[in-house]
Amino acid sequence: MDTLFKRLYRTNRVLGSVFGYRVRPWIASGALVSVRSLVSASMALDRLFYPQLRRVQVESPVIIVGNPRNGTTFLQRFLCENGVGAGLELHRMLYPSLILQKAVKPVLPALERLSPARFHDGDVHETDLTAVETEDAGLFFRHVDGFFLYGFLLAFDEDDMFDAFDPKKTDRAGRDFDWLDALWRRNLLASGADRVVGKIFSLGARLPAFIEKYPDARILYLARQPEDAIPSNMSLITGVLDRAFGFWALPEAVRERYLDRLYKALVQSLQRFHDDYASGRVGQQNVHIVQYDRLMTDFENTMDGIFRFIGHEADDTLQQALERQGAHQRTRRSRHQYDPAMFGLDREQIRRDCAFFYDAFL
Image (cartoon, rainbow, N blue to C red; front, side):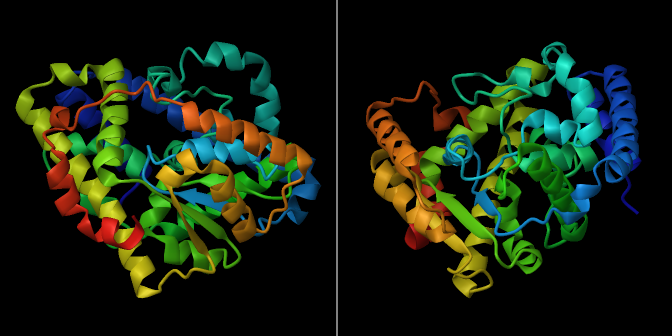
Protein backbone atom coordinates (compact mmCIF):
# COMPACT_ATOMS: atom_id res chain seq x y z
CA MET A 1 0.00 0.00 0.00
CA ASP A 2 1.36 3.42 -0.98
CA THR A 3 1.58 5.75 2.00
CA LEU A 4 2.89 9.22 2.75
CA PHE A 5 5.91 7.74 4.51
CA LYS A 6 6.74 5.49 1.56
CA ARG A 7 6.62 8.50 -0.78
CA LEU A 8 8.86 10.47 1.60
CA TYR A 9 11.28 7.55 1.77
CA ARG A 10 11.50 7.27 -2.03
CA THR A 11 11.96 11.02 -2.37
CA ASN A 12 14.69 11.18 0.26
CA ARG A 13 16.41 8.16 -1.26
CA VAL A 14 16.67 10.04 -4.57
CA LEU A 15 17.90 13.19 -2.86
CA GLY A 16 20.60 11.11 -1.19
CA SER A 17 21.69 8.88 -4.07
CA VAL A 18 21.52 11.48 -6.86
CA PHE A 19 22.27 14.79 -5.15
CA GLY A 20 24.18 13.65 -2.05
CA TYR A 21 21.77 15.11 0.49
CA ARG A 22 21.49 12.57 3.33
CA VAL A 23 20.34 14.42 6.44
CA ARG A 24 18.58 17.61 5.35
CA PRO A 25 15.79 15.80 3.44
CA TRP A 26 14.77 13.96 6.59
CA ILE A 27 14.74 17.20 8.57
CA ALA A 28 12.57 18.77 5.85
CA SER A 29 10.33 15.69 5.87
CA GLY A 30 9.83 16.01 9.61
CA ALA A 31 8.90 19.66 9.20
CA LEU A 32 6.48 18.82 6.38
CA VAL A 33 4.75 16.10 8.41
CA SER A 34 4.48 18.48 11.37
CA VAL A 35 2.97 21.23 9.22
CA ARG A 36 0.62 18.69 7.66
CA SER A 37 -0.63 17.63 11.10
CA LEU A 38 -1.02 21.25 12.16
CA VAL A 39 -2.99 21.98 8.98
CA SER A 40 -5.34 19.03 9.61
CA ALA A 41 -6.06 20.14 13.17
CA SER A 42 -6.50 23.79 12.17
CA MET A 43 -8.84 22.96 9.31
CA ALA A 44 -11.03 21.01 11.73
CA LEU A 45 -11.14 24.16 13.91
CA ASP A 46 -12.08 26.23 10.83
CA ARG A 47 -15.46 24.52 10.84
CA LEU A 48 -16.00 25.68 14.43
CA PHE A 49 -14.80 29.28 14.06
CA TYR A 50 -16.12 29.80 10.52
CA PRO A 51 -19.56 28.13 10.47
CA GLN A 52 -20.37 29.98 7.24
CA LEU A 53 -17.81 27.71 5.54
CA ARG A 54 -20.48 25.00 5.39
CA ARG A 55 -22.54 27.15 3.03
CA VAL A 56 -19.73 27.92 0.57
CA GLN A 57 -19.98 25.91 -2.64
CA VAL A 58 -17.67 25.72 -5.66
CA GLU A 59 -19.86 26.56 -8.66
CA SER A 60 -18.85 26.97 -12.31
CA PRO A 61 -15.11 27.00 -11.58
CA VAL A 62 -12.85 28.35 -14.30
CA ILE A 63 -9.87 26.02 -14.54
CA ILE A 64 -6.85 26.72 -16.73
CA VAL A 65 -5.16 23.57 -18.01
CA GLY A 66 -2.10 22.97 -20.15
CA ASN A 67 1.54 22.07 -19.71
CA PRO A 68 3.63 24.78 -18.03
CA ARG A 69 5.06 27.49 -20.29
CA ASN A 70 1.85 27.66 -22.30
CA GLY A 71 0.68 31.03 -20.95
CA THR A 72 -1.31 29.46 -18.12
CA THR A 73 0.15 31.58 -15.32
CA PHE A 74 -0.27 34.78 -17.30
CA LEU A 75 -3.93 34.04 -18.07
CA GLN A 76 -4.80 32.98 -14.54
CA ARG A 77 -3.23 36.04 -12.95
CA PHE A 78 -4.87 38.39 -15.44
CA LEU A 79 -8.31 36.92 -14.71
CA CYS A 80 -7.76 37.08 -10.96
CA GLU A 81 -6.34 40.60 -10.97
CA ASN A 82 -9.33 41.83 -12.95
CA GLY A 83 -12.11 40.46 -10.78
CA VAL A 84 -13.18 37.34 -12.68
CA GLY A 85 -12.54 35.12 -9.68
CA ALA A 86 -10.10 34.03 -6.99
CA GLY A 87 -6.91 32.07 -7.46
CA LEU A 88 -4.91 30.42 -4.70
CA GLU A 89 -1.80 32.17 -3.49
CA LEU A 90 1.09 29.86 -2.70
CA HIS A 91 0.96 30.40 1.07
CA ARG A 92 -2.76 29.59 1.10
CA MET A 93 -1.90 26.15 -0.31
CA LEU A 94 0.88 25.59 2.19
CA TYR A 95 -1.28 26.86 5.09
CA PRO A 96 -4.85 26.34 3.84
CA SER A 97 -6.55 26.71 7.23
CA LEU A 98 -8.19 30.11 7.66
CA ILE A 99 -6.97 30.18 11.24
CA LEU A 100 -3.40 29.40 10.21
CA GLN A 101 -3.43 32.00 7.46
CA LYS A 102 -4.11 34.74 9.98
CA ALA A 103 -1.29 33.48 12.17
CA VAL A 104 1.36 33.26 9.43
CA LYS A 105 0.49 36.45 7.53
CA PRO A 106 2.78 38.70 9.64
CA VAL A 107 5.77 36.38 9.14
CA LEU A 108 5.40 35.70 5.40
CA PRO A 109 8.44 37.88 4.52
CA ALA A 110 10.59 35.75 6.82
CA LEU A 111 9.14 32.52 5.42
CA GLU A 112 10.18 33.59 1.91
CA ARG A 113 13.76 32.66 2.85
CA LEU A 114 12.62 29.04 3.23
CA SER A 115 10.17 28.92 0.34
CA PRO A 116 10.93 26.69 -2.68
CA ALA A 117 9.77 29.63 -4.81
CA ARG A 118 13.17 31.24 -4.21
CA PHE A 119 14.76 28.80 -6.67
CA HIS A 120 12.81 30.16 -9.65
CA ASP A 121 14.48 32.49 -12.13
CA GLY A 122 12.36 35.65 -12.29
CA ASP A 123 12.98 35.93 -16.04
CA VAL A 124 11.33 32.53 -16.50
CA HIS A 125 8.66 32.39 -13.81
CA GLU A 126 8.15 35.14 -11.27
CA THR A 127 6.67 33.84 -8.03
CA ASP A 128 6.70 34.06 -4.24
CA LEU A 129 4.48 33.02 -1.32
CA THR A 130 1.90 35.72 -2.12
CA ALA A 131 1.70 34.92 -5.84
CA VAL A 132 -1.27 33.11 -7.37
CA GLU A 133 0.03 29.69 -8.34
CA THR A 134 -0.93 26.28 -9.68
CA GLU A 135 -2.99 24.01 -7.42
CA ASP A 136 -0.59 21.20 -8.29
CA ALA A 137 1.64 22.74 -5.61
CA GLY A 138 -1.19 22.39 -3.09
CA LEU A 139 -1.61 18.73 -3.93
CA PHE A 140 2.13 18.22 -3.48
CA PHE A 141 2.21 19.98 -0.10
CA ARG A 142 -0.64 17.81 1.18
CA HIS A 143 0.17 14.41 -0.26
CA VAL A 144 3.87 14.61 -1.35
CA ASP A 145 2.59 13.22 -4.61
CA GLY A 146 1.61 14.13 -8.15
CA PHE A 147 3.45 15.29 -11.25
CA PHE A 148 5.37 17.88 -9.21
CA LEU A 149 7.05 15.07 -7.32
CA TYR A 150 7.72 13.00 -10.43
CA GLY A 151 8.86 15.87 -12.63
CA PHE A 152 11.19 17.49 -10.11
CA LEU A 153 12.54 14.45 -8.24
CA LEU A 154 11.31 10.91 -8.75
CA ALA A 155 12.08 10.88 -12.48
CA PHE A 156 15.70 10.67 -11.27
CA ASP A 157 15.11 7.29 -9.62
CA GLU A 158 16.90 4.30 -11.14
CA ASP A 159 13.50 2.70 -11.66
CA ASP A 160 11.09 4.64 -13.86
CA MET A 161 8.31 5.70 -11.46
CA PHE A 162 5.98 7.13 -14.12
CA ASP A 163 3.31 4.44 -13.69
CA ALA A 164 2.96 5.42 -10.03
CA PHE A 165 1.85 8.89 -11.15
CA ASP A 166 -0.12 7.92 -14.24
CA PRO A 167 -3.84 8.41 -13.47
CA LYS A 168 -4.67 5.56 -15.80
CA LYS A 169 -2.58 3.23 -13.62
CA THR A 170 -2.98 4.84 -10.19
CA ASP A 171 -6.24 6.73 -9.72
CA ARG A 172 -6.16 9.31 -6.91
CA ALA A 173 -8.79 11.62 -8.40
CA GLY A 174 -11.23 11.33 -5.50
CA ARG A 175 -8.59 12.13 -2.91
CA ASP A 176 -7.15 15.05 -4.89
CA PHE A 177 -10.46 16.62 -5.90
CA ASP A 178 -11.78 16.52 -2.32
CA TRP A 179 -8.65 18.35 -1.17
CA LEU A 180 -8.98 20.94 -3.94
CA ASP A 181 -12.60 21.51 -2.93
CA ALA A 182 -11.51 22.17 0.66
CA LEU A 183 -8.85 24.63 -0.52
CA TRP A 184 -11.21 26.42 -2.88
CA ARG A 185 -14.08 26.83 -0.42
CA ARG A 186 -11.77 28.41 2.14
CA ASN A 187 -10.25 30.69 -0.46
CA LEU A 188 -13.67 31.82 -1.67
CA LEU A 189 -14.62 32.69 1.89
CA ALA A 190 -11.34 34.49 2.59
CA SER A 191 -11.33 36.46 -0.68
CA GLY A 192 -15.04 37.27 -0.88
CA ALA A 193 -15.06 36.09 -4.50
CA ASP A 194 -17.90 34.01 -5.88
CA ARG A 195 -15.91 32.01 -8.41
CA VAL A 196 -12.75 29.93 -8.51
CA VAL A 197 -10.12 30.66 -11.13
CA GLY A 198 -7.69 27.76 -10.83
CA LYS A 199 -4.72 26.42 -12.75
CA ILE A 200 -3.97 22.70 -12.69
CA PHE A 201 -1.63 21.41 -15.39
CA SER A 202 -2.02 17.77 -14.26
CA LEU A 203 -5.74 17.86 -15.07
CA GLY A 204 -4.85 17.44 -18.72
CA ALA A 205 -4.45 13.73 -18.02
CA ARG A 206 -7.68 13.28 -16.03
CA LEU A 207 -10.26 15.79 -17.17
CA PRO A 208 -13.18 13.33 -17.51
CA ALA A 209 -13.06 12.56 -13.78
CA PHE A 210 -12.87 16.26 -12.89
CA ILE A 211 -15.85 17.15 -15.08
CA GLU A 212 -17.79 14.32 -13.49
CA LYS A 213 -17.28 16.02 -10.10
CA TYR A 214 -17.81 19.55 -11.46
CA PRO A 215 -20.14 19.23 -14.46
CA ASP A 216 -20.50 23.03 -14.66
CA ALA A 217 -16.72 23.60 -14.83
CA ARG A 218 -15.30 25.76 -17.58
CA ILE A 219 -11.92 24.48 -18.74
CA LEU A 220 -9.56 26.79 -20.64
CA TYR A 221 -6.98 24.58 -22.32
CA LEU A 222 -3.87 26.48 -23.41
CA ALA A 223 -2.27 25.09 -26.59
CA ARG A 224 1.20 26.22 -27.65
CA GLN A 225 3.46 24.74 -30.28
CA PRO A 226 5.22 21.85 -28.48
CA GLU A 227 8.52 22.65 -30.21
CA ASP A 228 8.54 25.87 -28.17
CA ALA A 229 6.59 24.85 -25.08
CA ILE A 230 8.38 21.61 -24.22
CA PRO A 231 11.98 22.97 -24.25
CA SER A 232 10.77 26.05 -22.37
CA ASN A 233 9.16 23.83 -19.74
CA MET A 234 12.29 21.70 -19.43
CA SER A 235 14.36 24.87 -19.08
CA LEU A 236 12.13 26.06 -16.22
CA ILE A 237 12.35 22.75 -14.36
CA THR A 238 16.09 22.21 -14.83
CA GLY A 239 16.71 25.83 -13.87
CA VAL A 240 15.01 25.25 -10.51
CA LEU A 241 16.88 21.96 -10.06
CA ASP A 242 20.20 23.61 -10.89
CA ARG A 243 19.69 26.40 -8.36
CA ALA A 244 18.53 23.96 -5.71
CA PHE A 245 20.83 20.98 -6.30
CA GLY A 246 23.32 21.70 -9.10
CA PHE A 247 21.58 19.79 -11.91
CA TRP A 248 24.14 20.52 -14.63
CA ALA A 249 26.95 19.20 -12.45
CA LEU A 250 25.36 15.72 -12.32
CA PRO A 251 26.90 12.87 -14.34
CA GLU A 252 25.82 13.01 -17.97
CA ALA A 253 24.16 9.59 -17.87
CA VAL A 254 21.97 10.66 -14.93
CA ARG A 255 20.99 13.90 -16.66
CA GLU A 256 20.16 12.17 -19.94
CA ARG A 257 18.01 9.51 -18.25
CA TYR A 258 16.09 12.19 -16.36
CA LEU A 259 15.62 14.46 -19.39
CA ASP A 260 14.37 11.57 -21.51
CA ARG A 261 11.76 10.67 -18.88
CA LEU A 262 10.70 14.29 -18.44
CA TYR A 263 10.28 14.76 -22.18
CA LYS A 264 8.21 11.59 -22.52
CA ALA A 265 5.99 12.63 -19.60
CA LEU A 266 5.30 16.03 -21.18
CA VAL A 267 4.42 14.45 -24.52
CA GLN A 268 2.23 11.90 -22.73
CA SER A 269 0.33 14.72 -21.01
CA LEU A 270 -0.50 16.23 -24.41
CA GLN A 271 -1.48 12.82 -25.73
CA ARG A 272 -3.86 12.12 -22.84
CA PHE A 273 -5.73 15.39 -23.28
CA HIS A 274 -5.88 14.93 -27.04
CA ASP A 275 -7.31 11.41 -26.71
CA ASP A 276 -9.98 12.47 -24.20
CA TYR A 277 -10.97 15.47 -26.32
CA ALA A 278 -10.97 13.62 -29.65
CA SER A 279 -13.02 10.74 -28.24
CA GLY A 280 -15.65 13.03 -26.75
CA ARG A 281 -14.89 12.05 -23.15
CA VAL A 282 -14.62 15.80 -22.56
CA GLY A 283 -16.96 17.97 -24.58
CA GLN A 284 -16.85 21.43 -26.06
CA GLN A 285 -19.49 22.56 -23.56
CA ASN A 286 -16.80 22.16 -20.88
CA VAL A 287 -13.56 22.84 -22.76
CA HIS A 288 -12.43 25.90 -24.71
CA ILE A 289 -9.14 25.70 -26.63
CA VAL A 290 -7.01 28.85 -26.28
CA GLN A 291 -4.12 29.08 -28.71
CA TYR A 292 -1.06 30.62 -27.10
CA ASP A 293 -0.03 32.57 -30.21
CA ARG A 294 -3.44 34.22 -30.46
CA LEU A 295 -3.38 35.04 -26.76
CA MET A 296 -0.10 36.86 -27.32
CA THR A 297 -0.87 38.63 -30.61
CA ASP A 298 -4.66 39.05 -30.64
CA PHE A 299 -5.31 39.42 -26.94
CA GLU A 300 -8.57 41.39 -26.94
CA ASN A 301 -10.42 39.11 -29.37
CA THR A 302 -9.08 35.98 -27.71
CA MET A 303 -10.24 37.21 -24.32
CA ASP A 304 -13.63 38.09 -25.76
CA GLY A 305 -14.04 34.44 -26.76
CA ILE A 306 -12.95 33.34 -23.29
CA PHE A 307 -15.44 35.63 -21.58
CA ARG A 308 -18.28 34.37 -23.73
CA PHE A 309 -17.34 30.78 -22.91
CA ILE A 310 -17.13 31.28 -19.14
CA GLY A 311 -20.17 33.57 -19.03
CA HIS A 312 -18.44 36.70 -17.75
CA GLU A 313 -19.45 40.17 -18.91
CA ALA A 314 -16.60 42.65 -19.24
CA ASP A 315 -17.42 46.07 -17.79
CA ASP A 316 -15.73 49.34 -18.81
CA THR A 317 -12.87 48.89 -16.32
CA LEU A 318 -12.13 45.41 -17.62
CA GLN A 319 -12.32 46.58 -21.24
CA GLN A 320 -9.70 49.21 -20.49
CA ALA A 321 -7.50 46.58 -18.84
CA LEU A 322 -7.88 44.40 -21.94
CA GLU A 323 -6.78 47.24 -24.22
CA ARG A 324 -3.75 48.05 -22.05
CA GLN A 325 -2.68 44.43 -21.83
CA GLY A 326 -3.25 43.86 -25.54
CA ALA A 327 -0.97 46.78 -26.42
CA HIS A 328 1.66 45.43 -24.05
CA GLN A 329 1.43 41.90 -25.46
CA ARG A 330 2.08 43.06 -29.00
CA THR A 331 5.42 44.63 -28.03
CA ARG A 332 6.49 42.17 -25.35
CA ARG A 333 9.63 40.11 -25.82
CA SER A 334 10.36 37.22 -23.47
CA ARG A 335 13.67 37.28 -21.60
CA HIS A 336 13.62 33.50 -21.28
CA GLN A 337 16.32 31.99 -23.48
CA TYR A 338 16.68 28.25 -24.13
CA ASP A 339 17.96 25.84 -26.75
CA PRO A 340 16.27 22.43 -27.35
CA ALA A 341 19.72 20.93 -27.92
CA MET A 342 20.48 21.51 -24.22
CA PHE A 343 17.98 18.75 -23.50
CA GLY A 344 19.00 16.38 -26.28
CA LEU A 345 16.09 17.51 -28.50
CA ASP A 346 15.58 19.10 -31.88
CA ARG A 347 12.50 20.79 -33.26
CA GLU A 348 11.86 18.20 -35.96
CA GLN A 349 11.81 15.41 -33.41
CA ILE A 350 9.31 17.28 -31.25
CA ARG A 351 7.10 17.98 -34.28
CA ARG A 352 7.10 14.27 -35.16
CA ASP A 353 6.38 13.11 -31.63
CA CYS A 354 3.59 15.66 -31.18
CA ALA A 355 2.09 15.55 -34.70
CA PHE A 356 -1.27 14.52 -33.18
CA PHE A 357 -1.36 17.76 -31.16
CA TYR A 358 -0.45 20.03 -34.06
CA ASP A 359 -3.11 18.43 -36.26
CA ALA A 360 -5.88 18.75 -33.67
CA PHE A 361 -5.23 22.10 -31.99
CA LEU A 362 -2.70 24.18 -33.95
